[in-house]
Image 1 (cartoon, rainbow, N blue to C red):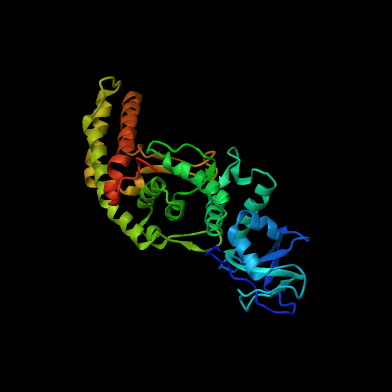
Image 2 (tube, helix red, strand yellow):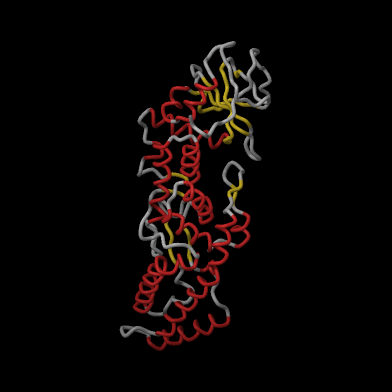
Length: 354
């Protein structure tokens, strides 16, 4: 018997007609469906009814299978016995037995889409050529994991995971996922859920670069639910900021002190640039928000990628110095991730194996 159990509608022999607060979903409502799932209300989503097929859900989710067997949810009035219930929900919706779930309508829509289209052999979120919103992938992974729909959960999370575990500080290959920098908070929580230490390490690193208030307060998901770091993860990130920042400034100043390259075509201008930039850094050290030029997302590039910021002080006057120092700088940053990141975060090095 599965341990995770959504609540179901109350045990009653009479059909409830109090549906004022529940609306039908426009996408997942099948007239011949034999079970109605009623989503939970959030600050941005009302309760929504999804009329689907028990067999479709039971085939991919042992949790739903056990729930249907336990509840005895069979179509037809007078034939339903639901020992797990919430008194606020109708037992029947349009003559069909109901089950109330704790997910929002947005979460259920993503999850049911993954279930239905997978049953129809439609790639949906599995298509590697189709750009996917991070919110959809994260929701499918999280909800499918809860309901033990393992194949769906693994497929969704692995697409996110590949983007993060291949991030080496120079760039992140595109895995056709739209995301923003603050999505790293959700990735941290998913990495714990799916036991992915590599993903966790890089996601924590990216969280360290978030504005302090955002790091502390978390970020809102599309359904209005706030996603936060655990107290332990927040403390790891907060404690890592100082050593990360010190290394970043020391390494950048080292490049400036090296001055023009032997192949420099504008030695006087480049030497003056290096001196002015180093003096400016001494007056005003760089903050962690300057580490990245941009975490590309949503229309900027075809998928998620990231780049380091080298424009502030390594924008050398001549192309030769600019290219050489930039490439060396990127290499040092890439090497710093496996060498220093676990130390900065005070956790075991997880980059050698996943």
